Length: 352
Ligand code: UT7
Image (cartoon, rainbow, N blue to C red):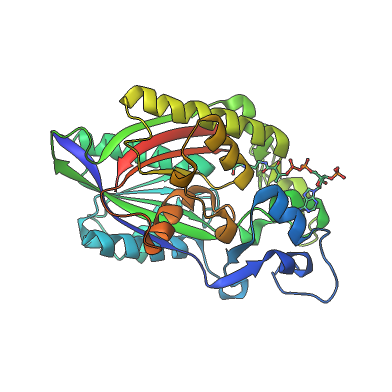
């Protein structure tokens, strides 16, 4: 029987570390100013979110999301011992694509040097913070059905160029960071139900769509982009908007239900599972999920303190971070649960 297995894992964050106490003084090019630009502070950010620092790209260097994806992909391919030419499908999750279209996966394909007439299938998926679990569900289905043999699944986000560095946007701006994570998912012959990807479940509730969104354009209007981006007149159009408390409550509730469902459906218990890797949106969300779903605290892995919310990248980034720290090892069993804009959410259980 064909099963999908994680063959390799990699992540990348840009080198610039931005600490909470720098945030109030940054202008929209992320350049520190002498005077305060935003009314916020380290104490508020730590207490409400658990974030201490995040990474930003060098805005002046013209970095794109596909550049971050490329670094993470190269590391995952090397870890898997797979040549980029062997990849027959790329699935890329992002809410910060290089441009509106074409999708970012094709830019990544070119940067990997595997474009051309025999180029592999390239999918962009738009499930925001839930991108990794949605993408894993697709990769698993493609591989099990024999459609593809080696799928490169990437979550990559460049948030810092699209945040409102004023008090108006502080509730969202302080949360997000730049980064990417990738896995190579490959076909293996095995009848062992505890090998590879054991379980995935993806869900959505569109009634939550306007609780977390970024418009940029409005297709019902002509011209579709009608704001003055230079003067930053229309903040609603060009910056993410969030009803934070509502998103928080739905995140906790759905992540608890999805996590318990994953155990019920597989018959596994926390004795079988090595690590719980939740999406990294807010440390308080993850602590609440751990409490309500009765997850052993020492099995929960977080990295939001150091990277903030990197949306589709948080799950592979967190696993890779803790692997580098020596906690997570090959062969460990991971239960990952995510929640994000849409609302979308899901869980997956997979062996590394
Ligand atoms: O990635 C997937 C989805 N995202 C999430 O899951 C995020 C979910 N939501 C959250 O994490 C939280 O709702 C936030 C961290 C965004 C906000 O925390 P909160 O405890 O819900 O705070 P709040 O929105 O109720 O704001 C409390 C106060 C307000 O002031 P007043 O009205 O009490 O005077 C805000 O204006 O804190 C103020 N505030 C800030 N103060 C300093 C909001 N943002 C900031 C800030 N610095 N950055």
